[in-house]
Length: 143
Image 1: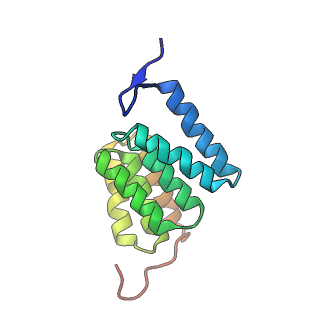
Image 2 (image 1 turned 45 degrees about the horizontal axis):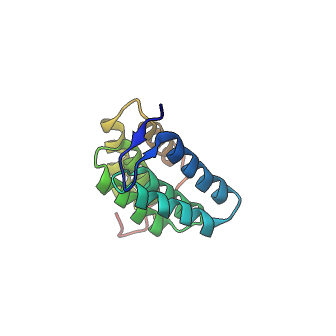
């Protein structure tokens, strides 16, 4: 029997996974508008889950719209304040927006929240990339 996920209407975990995978496939194919429709629909179906918001943030990020990605990642963070993955993605967007002080705060929080989780692994990779010089230094006068 499929496990149902509480949301706007009952959906099985398998259906949610398929829906989100379809959105990521559309995004990979460059069909961003269609992917947005899928992810937005997923977010409407699952208003208490941060996962569709992370997907929407990833979609914006893939198009180089880091400010819009940050907005979606922050929405995910509001839904699930203790999600290390949300924190790590917020940190990632902040790094790309050249806000390293804020980014480091979020990345360290991701490491503390769930040291063995996916968010911590992403945070570690981003911190290593920052240390290796993959991100520009902050502009003078900006934290």
